[in-house]
Image 1 (cartoon, rainbow, N blue to C red):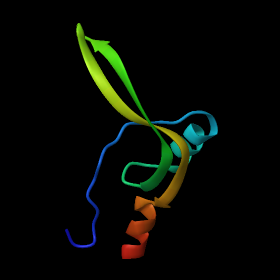
Image 2 (image 1 turned 45 degrees about the horizontal axis):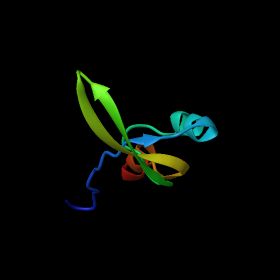
Image 3 (image 1 turned 30 degrees about the horizontal axis):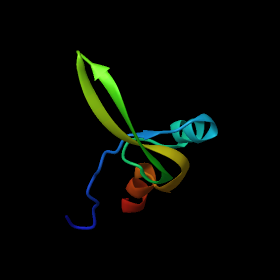
Image 4 (image 1 turned 90 degrees about the horizontal axis):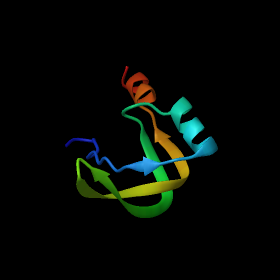
Length: 74
């Protein structure tokens, strides 16, 4: 991949101001840094137990937004 990034999808959970700011300023395709702790939990779904790993966000840093990158390319 020339100058691009691989994409990883990791479930992250944010609360209060962190969640509100992320919702307001972050869009699909933006690059963010997440500082937090890993949490595991189980959920029952259709009679089966699923094991989940997620990040509980303590801080989210906005590193790059897709709109800004598109403007820079013009």
